[in-house]
Amino acid sequence: MTRQFTRGSLEAADVLGGRVEANFVRVLTRLLAAHAMAEKLTALGYQRALDTIDRPALSAVIRKNLAEEHKHARLVYAALAEIGVSEAQADRSLLTALKAASFAAPRHFAEHSAGELDLVMASVSLDMTGLIMIGVNYSESSYAPHARAAEVIVAEEEEHELFASNILCDAADRFGVPVVNAALREWLPRAVNFFGPPGSGFTFDCMRYGLKARDNTELADLYLTLLQRQVRQAGLDMPALTKHYPHALAES
Ligand SMILES: [Fe+2]
Ligand SMILES: [Fe+2]
Image 1 (tube, rainbow, N blue to C red):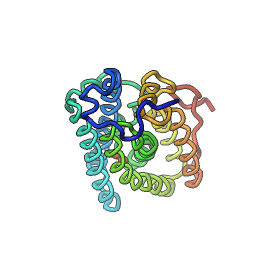
Image 2: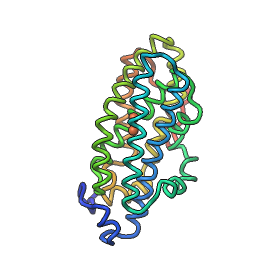
Image 3: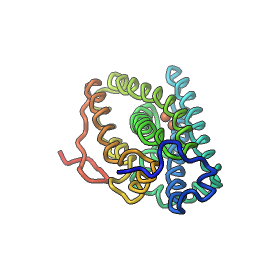
Image 4: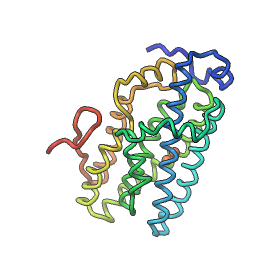
């Protein structure tokens, strides 16, 4: 598909000054609002982890990741502010979207996670996925403030992803393979659904405008391939999922 705008070619002034059609502003606002909310919910989850986990070896990293997720949320809300959308307005626009399958993983982390195993699964479900979405899609955004924010975020998410794969390996030793396999079966559908539905009109518009480089399915497949390698390295089983979005566990 041909992109209407190349990477970083639009500043807030272009968006506000009418260089783009009204639908571009609507799509950009929704995309940024969803990104900001995902970062904010991830920060809330890390806060829960900090409150419920007291293993000193983990606390320092949790504290670091928490501060960075807050920063990521602030960066994306700042990109929204540049086009005149406040944090409250952005959050309000997501009231329906938040109930969808694509937000189940960050919401679960923010609202229900408890203890170390949930932290492991959340990190695998949110930091690894986030790195892919931001690195592949948002770093290439035609909206320059989002591309700049993404560059900062990606550098930190690379460390979060490393943390996720390390604690996944440790978890198999600490909790035992059957327990971690069960947690993976619980979390993997949520993690994959975080990429959103395939072939939606919204994503089509995002790609046309150069706000996303790839469709959600491509990213979800990339995630499953990368995760499968790590899951096997940790001596765990990769759960099988149903083919269509929203994905669930396949009957075994
Ligand atoms: Fe983040
Ligand atoms: Fe992260």
